[in-house]
Amino acid sequence: MAVHGVLYRPAELEGFVAEEDGEPSGLITYHVDGGACEIVTLDSLFERRGIGSALLDAVVALGHARVWLTTTNDNTAAIGFYERHGFRVVAVHEGAVDRARANLKPEIPLEGRDGVEIHDEVELELQPA
Image (tube, rainbow, N blue to C red; front, side):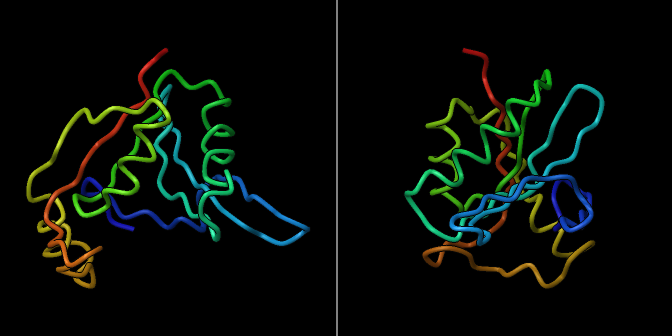
C-alpha cells in the first residue's frame, strides 16, 4: 500500500482481526510512530454489522495521543464512516496519488469507486470529544 510517499506491507503491521462464529470477518492494521497511531487498512467482509466500528474502537482504545489515517478522494464511503466516528478531514494532499502512481506503485488504478478519478489523498484525524 502506498500512502503519503511510503510503501507499507499490511501483512507486516500490527493489527486486530474480527471474527464471527470463529471465522474472520474483518481486519484493521496500524503503524505507531511515537504517540501517533496511523490506521493503514480497515476491511470488513460484511457491511453494517459493526465490524469496522469494533475494529476502529480497538485501535482507539490503545490510547495513542493521535489517531489518523489517509484515504483517497474517491473513497467517500470511508470518509463518511470515519467522520461518523469523530474523525475530521485535516488535509487534502492534491496530486499525492498521481505521484505515488508515478514513483512508487504504478499499479494504482486511474479510476476508483463509481468511476471517480483518483488523484488526491485525504487525511483524517480523530478529534477529541
